[in-house]
Amino acid sequence: MKALFLVGGMGTRLRPLTNKIPKPMIPIMGKPLLERSILNLKSVGIKEVVLSTCYRAQYIQRYFENGEKLGMKIYHVKEDIPLGTGGAIKNAEEYFDDTFLIFNSDILSDIDLKEFIKYHREKGADVTIAVTQVDDPSMYGVIEYDENDYAISFKEKPQPHEVTSNFINAGAYIFEPKVLEEIPAGRVVSVEKEVFPQLIEKGYKIAVYKGCSYWIDIGTPERYLQAHMDIMSGKYRINGLNFSGKGIYKGPGCDIHSSVKIYEPVYIGANVKIEENASIGANAIIGDNVRIGRGVKIMRSIIWNDVVVENGATLIDTIVASNCRIKQGCDYYSTVYVGEDSCPMAI
Ligand code: GTP
Image 1 (cartoon, rainbow, N blue to C red):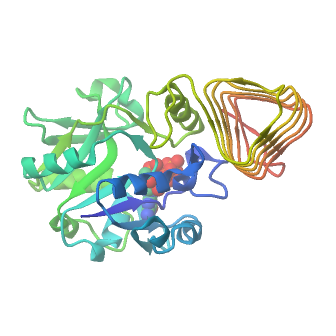
Image 2: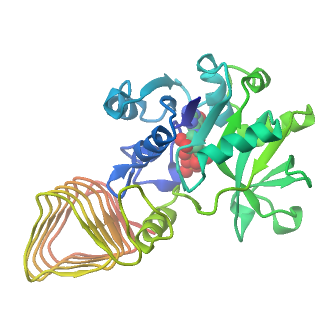
Image 3: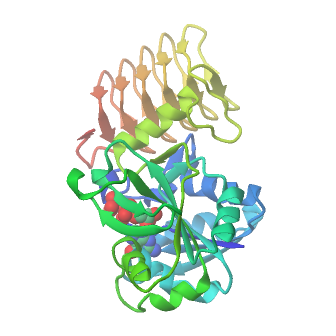
C-alpha cells in the first residue's frame, strides 16, 4: 500500500517558525515531523510514499530526495500554485491505482495503522476518516455519523449549537482510488469542505475510525510546545525516546560543566556545550550543536539546532529557531524567536 502526505500548506498559523522551513519539516524532538511520520509507515511495512509539495517544496525535495537514505521510495509531486487539500490529492492521482493512505503532515497521533486499514476493509468503505474526540470542536472540522459509524455530515468550525458530535477530522484517511474520479482537476479544492460532503450526497460510504487516543495538530506555536510537553510527560511516546515526566536524554559529543543543574525531563541533542552554573529544565528540549553560556536558565522551551545562548539569558516557554543567537542577559518568556531580522512573537 502507498501513502500520500499533504505537505504543501503555507503553515501561516505557525509563523514565524515557518518563514523559512515548511511546517512538516519542523523538528519534533530534534527530527523533522515528516521524517518521523514516514518512518512510522516504514515500521508497518509501507515503503512507498508520495509527497504533495508546494510551499518551500525544494526544502522537502532536497531533504528526502528519492527516499533511499530512509530505505523507502519517495516521489515528489509539486504544485505550481497551492491546490488545497483536495486539489493536491487529485494532482497525485497517477500514483494510486489501489487502496491508499493520506495524511495531513502536521499531526502527531498514536493511530494504529494496521487496525485503521483492517477497519476500512471490514466496513467496505470508499473512504475511511480517522476521527478524534475533543472538548471544544469549534476550531476544527466536525464529523457527525450514524449508528453504524458512517459519516452523515461535515461541519467546519461549527458553533456549539450546530453539532451533536465532538469528533473531529484527525487528518488521516484511507481512499479507494475510484473516489479520485469525483475530485475536479486543475483547480483549488478542499477535501474537508467540498469533497467529503459531495461524496456523501452521491451515496459513497465514508466510515469513521475512532481509534486515536492521542492526537494533536502542531499547527500553532502553543500546540507545538504542548506536543513536546506531552512527549516529556510520557502522554505520547516517540520511538527511541522514553520520557515519563522524568528522564534525561543526552546525544553524543556533549560538554556539560559539572556545576550545571539539570531538572528532568530534559532532551539534549548532539555536540551541545553548556557552561558553568546554567540551569536546564524541567522540560527543556535542546537541539544539536547548541552553545549555552554561563548562568543561562532554560525551562519548558524548545531550542532548535546551531543556536547560541549567551551568558545570563533566560528562556521560559519559548521556542528558538535554528542559527539564532540569544544575546547576553536577554530574557524571553512565551516567545517565538527566529532571529534579529524578525520581531520576537508572543505565544
Ligand atoms: P495554516 O496556513 O496555518 O492553516 O496551515 P496549512 O497551510 O498547513 O493548512 P492546513 O493546516 O489546513 O493543512 C493541512 C495539511 O494539508 C497540511 O499538512 C498542509 O501541508 C497540507 N496542505 C494544505 N494546503 C495544501 C495545498 O494547497 N497543497 C498541498 N500539497 N498541501 C496542502
